Image (cartoon, rainbow, N blue to C red; front, side):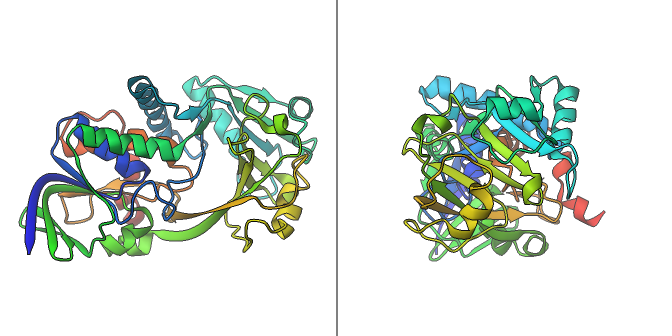
Length: 379
């Protein structure tokens, strides 16, 4: 068997893997990045045209340092490579003062913003209706949190740029390369790829939907993979949903059982994409939006034609508590697992990649990974 040795390997080159590869390469590490496809590709969770970002993270205060550091890294990437990686449209989160199900995500977001001194604005239902006439499904109990420095990230350019930059810095990238096994043996991480084998001193596994399969117990039980789908529709009035008039939006709609719908300003192709977690409607481009349009779009957004003009499938990987894992597997001190970052992970990915590089190279860490230990599931 043909065996090659290297200091570090990154398995999976989506959002987090690409960031880790870049951060290791810019520190001069000898590193190889491996992906079973050609990233950015549509088979995981790091594709599409937009991901929401904001600094007040309603999922918990442990994420605030990550997203803040990610914003700093993003700005540095944009300056260094003269790249356009973020739409700075602001982020709006809308919810009800009396949610019918679950907690009050807007209130949690406001609390974190106040604690961490994050610039924001609170909007009453009347102000929301005045400022955003596109939102026709607002109730008198709805209110909004607006973060002017939020907006949306451009995932595919971000992933591509970091992989390319890592290669320019000396990283090796192996794409269209499926792995058959990963194990730690005698101080090495052995990565089997058919007749080809890599020995690495340390490895990061950031393989998204394939992480449980690669790692085995306990991760195959902890990581749940689901299919999620976005649908794109075309607005009747082109200017209504452009970035100057419409923000990145998360709307917990009291009129729809508090289901959150996420949408973004109009993309370059003139369409607007919508996402509701847990809804995977079987519909094709060119078809009338049917149940999805009638239930999720028509009653809440003004001025869309009902014909589906685009659809993307995305694979979420989640832990039982919805939080990240940034930790080493039990008994494997040379493997670092970064997983379950779907749903709200892209905005943190640049800092998570830096954190992974710092942990592997035994540098001082910019952010704290304590909250993301796999041991929390066995405490």
